[in-house]
Length: 81
Image (cartoon, rainbow, N blue to C red):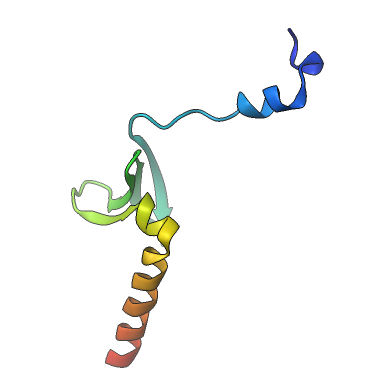
């Protein structure tokens, strides 16, 4: 059945794919290459060619823990100046 004839909910449900394995994408931040890895558990941002980086779990993002940690880190950096 062509998409033009399908009911609207069918079109939208066909647009998403379940995340079952890691997806990696390269991006530039301030002119430096980084790799963003998105997994079913969360995401990780590392400098290209390195193993260690910043990790965030989906649970922390949804619960607000990631925002709280970011705000605390920014506050501590500000106090140190």
